[in-house]
Image (cartoon, rainbow, N blue to C red; front, side):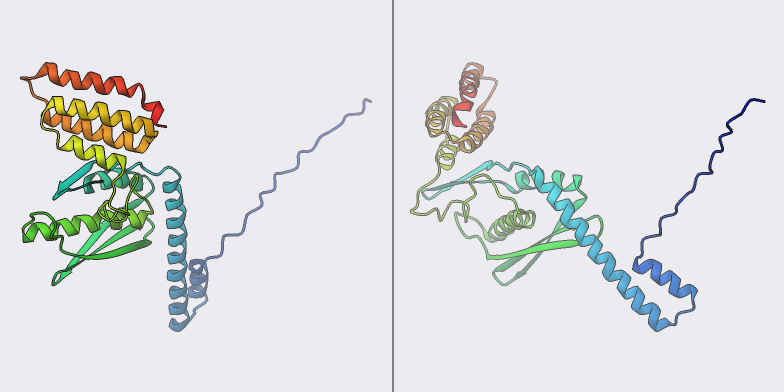
Length: 270
């Protein structure tokens, strides 16, 4: 009789992991055991605090992910009056760049605006989908610079505060952002971007803009200022679109060819 080897398969053993202990599970257990209302209220309060802490941790984690690849915010608007010229990022440019990135990580934002006399206060609140929110508040007087009427003075101050509270709440900044839109810039000088963006915005004709582009791009390339180059190029393209017209196709194509030629030298400003 031949010996036979019989193999016996052992039944698989399933090990159940204990459920994570949270205030909610403790609350359910206490209710099942007939806890009184005072105990239940304390456990419910503990649950709310636990949820708030978890939401805050989720907020911090999501914000860190957002800042791993922050949006680039370029100054796209130049203001010139009474001998002053400075560049800044418009509210639309700031929100357009930031809001989409925030939404990808579960964030939304809103502003609260209030006014007492001539003082204007704006609060920007960033809220994560888990419920946690953080806010930044700034205040200022009405902006009476230039030739604004009373309503425009308020609107300008509100827009300014909305722009900078959003930047502060997200911890971001525009490229070469000065402390006050460039008006308090040290000894009164301006950056290369502000200098040439101001000239581009005030160019009266396509020929004027072509000359501004040629001179400005050369100076910026020599300084190897990539940020200034990007801002200057964006403003020139915008001004070109404003000046461009069907009646002058030769002139407009001339600026396009000049901008295209300098694009090849963009690496020089790195």
